[in-house]
Length: 280
Length: 260
Image (cartoon, rainbow over all chains, first blue to last red; front, side, top):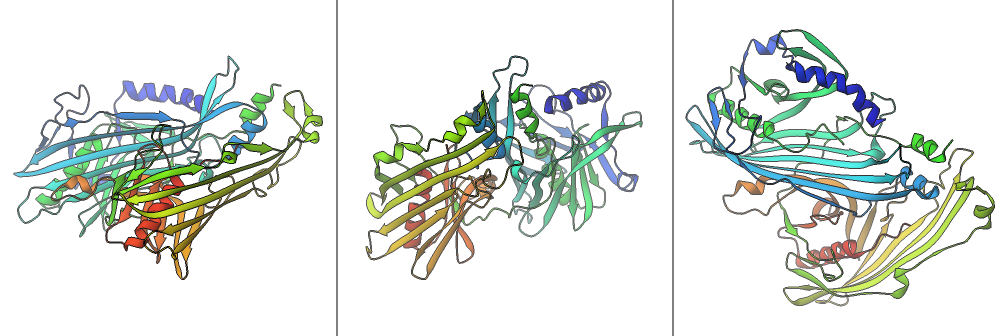
């Protein structure tokens, strides 16, 4: 059924590939915020630099994406494991782990920060070998964990507490409540940035509604992850549009806070592993 | 109709995810250490922090299991399709090892784990709780003896470490009135130890671990999975407690999966 869903998504993905879509920003926020388009995210990552508004990065020092796949300890025995044993179907429990790191400096408005980021993903799957030619082999996800972490060191006089950014997603098939085709599975997820005194909540934006560059609305059959919302005390201060690589920053913020928002946004946009939203 | 197609219709899939529920922020007092060893036959001993295991000995019976034959299974099967199947299996893991710290012996551990599988499958009607492991027995019993004071023997009991039952994988380590509990869980933990002026120590990731709690506070953790294995220990923890937890963490890493 996963293959069927992917086939159904193909026309929509083809449409979005041909026409640039972006996250629709509510006018109540867009009228009080500045849109910054991030350049440098697409293309080669050698000598990669980002530029958005008054902010620009140094060359991004990208680490290798390390992936390890092995038959690891089983986290628990699922219904699938029991049924496969009863019917003597060949299967194995496989754990795939990936991680990567990157670091860079961000400059803007006379301010500078060093940013260190790390991503890690681990997925446990049951690999099923059906021995049927037309059916082939497939796998079933048991659990999946993704985490993104960044340390932002602002080199700002009288304002040098480091910020810690965390985004994570934790999916377990045992706790999944999805029953129907377009039901979204249950996963634990959270995101925040904190310097010990202040905390910015980072919330994933999932929506069925997109907007093309000509302003036309597009509706998807399922809610898709489209970006992130940054909040302080329940007020939105920034939006990251991951479709069109835009960053919206609230105008009424002071220079230092705007700089922190820009640092958080750039580190999130530079991620390489699958995002928090995917449980493949 | 091919029974495999019928089986495939019974399986579940995961798709795009929705959220809520939060994992606690990383406790910066838990210092991470890489754990090496036990990853190939030539590296049997574990090494982490200042600890190292040695003299790991397993009984011969730990390498075998016994599966009870069943006449009903043979009679109630149509070709490859079992109409009824009762699966009874007995396995054990009995081993011991010593733990050194900085070359000096600190603890000696003996462990006995037993697994009795008793699962029944019915093709023609709904499965009951016996199919999901309600009748399985999965217990681990261990003794951790500290070298500094041989009268201090910590008793460890754990259940469902093979994950065959629908309950937590957990245990307790007790000596007199003192108790350390552990449970398999997912936690946000530091990636690197704290070092002066290095913001890299702020980086954290989610890991599946056995978390050890003492007086309702998490004081240690050890990776559940073999890949990128690590051990976390709270700085400043009493030495005897740290030695007991290190022994228990080694035991949980050395033990074998008994579910077949």
